[in-house]
Length: 466
Ligand SMILES: Cc1cc2nc3c(=O)[nH]c(=O)nc-3n(C[C@H](O)[C@H](O)[C@H](O)COP(=O)(O)OP(=O)(O)OC[C@H]3O[C@@H](n4cnc5c(N)ncnc54)[C@H](O)[C@@H]3O)c2cc1C
Image 1 (spheres, rainbow, N blue to C red):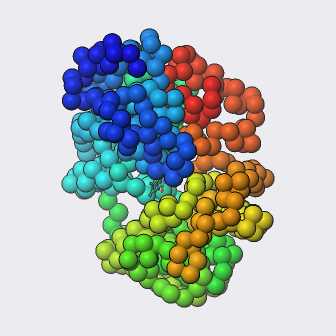
Image 2 (image 1 turned 90 degrees about the horizontal axis):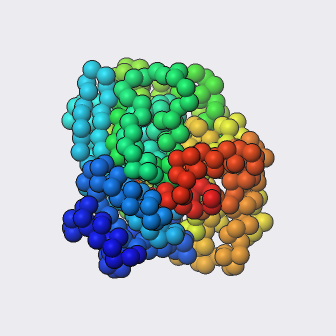
């Protein structure tokens, strides 16, 4: 990058909010994706303190045609914030202000760099609740909106899209726009707000957001239900919903995976029996919640459950949720990529069975778990397999990787699913977009990108090439 441009950035930000030494930029060359082949260093990392500074930076980049990559917590799982063509990384670390807590409208307005952990802490002080819970609390509000993140608790209350009321965004020409507001309903032309939610930093940099909140849930219970086999476990997810109960979360996971996380975290899963588990979270009033839990216990017992463990203690519930949330971390050292296909809930079982066939076909290991309540399934494509207490390299894992991925996506397509339910397309999934969308649809997406970003400076090479 030319010296004059670095000087311009220094003028805008001051010396301290600029990083250009290689060693200090290493952390910005990747997100949580394990595939190190795609890591790449930016030319410079900038840490602006407000939207006006971002606007000034973007004007320079737009004029010079320099890539601009928004980065939040770097917890993404699709390579979304990796500067694959170098350029400027905009780190939102210095933008964490809580601008307003509006108790009348049940909204909070914050800057985009606030992490999920910080966000939960703030709303907790005001006795308010925010249902979405993606697994890594160092993700930021900006990143969560840009990926339309979900998480285990999406079944009942939905994903980020259901909670974002308004955003402030800096566009590719440097203009600062406020989109949406605090209102709940809008039938007012095309929804620009919804276009930005899930746009992965390719249409603008989100700098502030107004998020809707809820009163705190009175009571939450977590149920752990063991089953002899995967089929019984997965089929019980839709059954619970068909019986008129919408839990906060319905997760499925296999014993082999649970054992790995127990070892990694040194924490204990509440039950030993069975080979597959459902983890179900329910909420409601004090009296109601136990009744709902008991009703679920009845349904699953009639349909193959080996036992039902109802957990009331909050600390123990947290530990169980931690085990579920840390699966990725426990498998990461031997994961090439984690997928997040979404299929109709009636087809989760078929999807998982097909994946088991792919696992066999390629003599590989594909740990599979996920959100049985909304059809969003995680498959890890692995380079190692855990056997006899150690990781063993899978033969020809490099050659198998793309074939396994293609086969899994083909099955998802066949079962009326979609490529990504919550992590986004980013860099890793873009070559498979054509399996799920027609040429016309991709063309429309590209035209939209051109309107917002004619010079293709905003996170180039993500979602699609150009
Ligand atoms: C252990 C673990 C568990 C996870 N569990 C879940 C889960 O359950 N559900 C789920 O949905 N995700 C999950 N994730 C993925 C990840 O946490 C989410 O994708 C999260 O939304 C990313 O937020 P971030 O701030 O880290 O964004 P980053 O990784 O920094 O960036 C992600 C994308 O958002 C863009 N972006 C970031 N900030 C902005 C901004 N201010 N304006 C515009 N674009 C921006 C980036 O350019 C990039 O394209 C998990 C990740 C890990 C490591």
